[in-house]
Amino acid sequence: MDNVDLNVLRQVASWLREERRVVLGTITRTWGSAPRPIGSVVAVRDDGQIAGSVSGGCIEDDLIAKVREGALRLRKPELLRYGVGAEEATRFGLPCGGTLELMLEPLTPASQIEELLARLDRGERVQRELELASGAVRLAAPARDADVLRLSDTHLSTHHGPQWRLLIIGAGQMTQYLAGMALALDYQVLICDPREEYADGFAVAGVQLTREMPDDVVLRFAPDGHSAVIALTHDPKLDDLALMEALKSPAFYVGAIGSRVNQGKRKARLAEHFGLGEAELARLHGPVGLHIGARTPPEIALAILAHMTAERYGVQIGATPSGYGADGGCAV
Image (cartoon, rainbow, N blue to C red; front, top):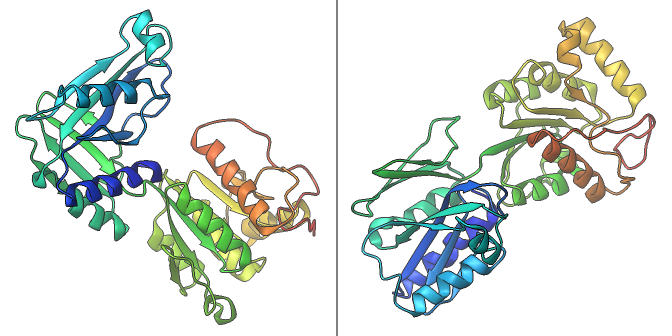
């Protein structure tokens, strides 16, 4: 669940506290292109006020009309399908012949929206299982790799909370921008820096800081295919310790700040002192980030997250060319 949908749940909770009737719609399936991914949500209040989005606006307009006509006074969850034919597809902003399915759920105290938000505020990942016959909801901790919406004849299972994790080595100024932007992109962020002069003054809401040594932190972090590790200290004694473990892990992205010259020296050290092979060293993105002419810390953070996003979705984009250090223009 991304931050857009989390904001929808917060709005829903506010409406329910006001004792308003609310219907929550969750995208369960799409055919062809779709404006929002599976799992995205929209909520409609009993007077037609809406929160969230699942289309370019036409489906939302249709839901509002249904509410005002009294057609959404549901007693239990109900599956609604849009855009089967070309005419409907055009009307609802879907590609010709495309289809989008929404599970419409009338919310009650049994929906456990407040408890779900409380767990999400604690940084937890939560599996929400909706029983279609009754509307009852069970909340549980999902399996580590379970982040796929599942719909059966009896249940709808959705997953909420950070589904991507980012470990940053170093608590400098750039880390503050990188961590803040990563939170907005639905990353759970952990910062590692044993240096008192940096860690003492670091504070970003929603981010955890540890002063353990980087190699121990990476091992405890246990990077998986939804994890990224970025080394930003410029100190080989710290960055190399993290990279030697991260490059052996399934992390989808491992990067380090510094010029190509320094990256070459780093790879030589990792091979000589830590025994990393060519395949592991080839996974290191360094200089880290896309070459977008970034010079300031927030611009560099943007370049890093842009490259991470491309890697997440399997988009092949050229990384930084020779001489670009992703470190405020310093190519040393």
